[in-house]
Image 1 (tube, rainbow, N blue to C red):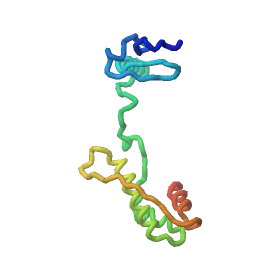
Image 2 (cartoon, helix red, strand yellow):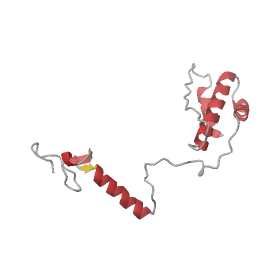
Image 3 (cartoon, one colour):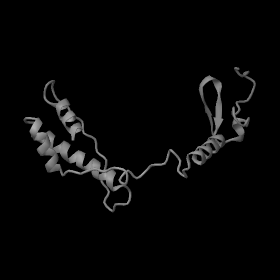
Length: 139
């Protein structure tokens, strides 16, 4: 049921006004939920699933991943088997992929901090950009 313009916005769950809570989130069809009801919902979900963790917390993936981390030299050798030429691109991508997995696997416990990096592949049609990406995806 649409609300009248002179009515204050309220949480659809607990009925509190927007002025009584820190945050009020609007959902579909004019439904609202306040930050306190969201916290209660998270607690209920945690209890029912038997976890103490919020689904929004980051997890250390190094325990869950079983990855055989290859060196940049090994990655480049793999690319050499499928891609002819593009030596500089293969080197840059090999190091970037290695650093990506190294950063993920070491997590926050490591003393060494590897920076995130992005690689932008530019070139004319048929120069091997897609082939490089597809070949790396096979590893």
